[in-house]
Length: 80
Image (spheres, rainbow, N blue to C red):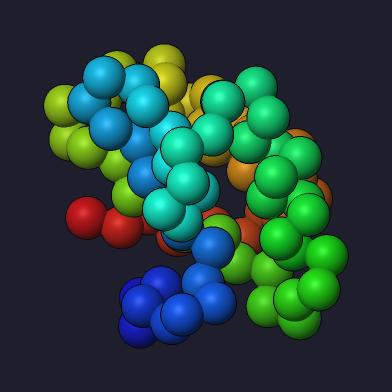
């Protein structure tokens, strides 16, 4: 996914311990959807990329995907 490397790409990272980052900023998972929605407001490209640690709890991954969907985008990519 070459667009994931762009400077203005919206990348959500999920660490092994459940910590969530939006770009380089750590965010509360409960606020992730609204923070993504704010970032998507000015963009024509509504794609969001999720980078999750392979050892992350699957439930945490599901919660992040739900937050991405609640932000108004169904278009997201999973990075490895």
